[in-house]
Amino acid sequence: MKIETNEQRDPGPGLTRSGLSSCRGRWFQALAVCVGLGVAGCSSGDGEATYPVSGRVVVGGEPAAGAFLVFHPTSGSVPAEAGRPAAQVRSDGSFDLTTFDESDGAPAGDYAVTVEWRKLIHNGAEAVAGPNVVPAEYGRPESTPLKVTVVEGENPPAEFQIDVTRRR
Image (cartoon, rainbow, N blue to C red; front, side, top):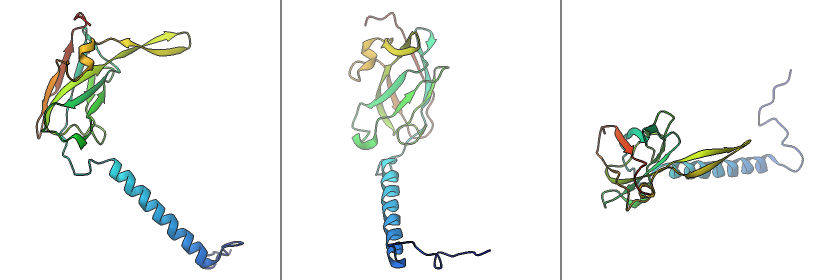
């Protein structure tokens, strides 16, 4: 049995050993750039601290499974580049907020919380998103009555009870 090392292996037609090394060097440079960009895309860039936020959303007495929440900063206490904390509500109505990494929470500050919940309408084999079940005022940061203050450290669970009998 013959075992070849990289130095012994024939690089193939048209490639010299120095050309192969040069190609490897460029490949590693490209990989380093991609990894660097990927890491930068997953952070706030300035190391913005986040604090866990979880809770429950109930609409008309029913867990809002599949609803989307977005926390919109309402004061200058949260930098614009900090991202938009958001969550999708689980089947039991619970959620964990995400800003940069899954379930990492949100930067400390004051927020207006918007909610959108479109139940699926089944039409034979197809399913399409229906109209928003939540009153329209909950879908705009300037009109939503849901307000939250995220503090540094531990935050109590946020409980959102939405009455669907309110005027849309």
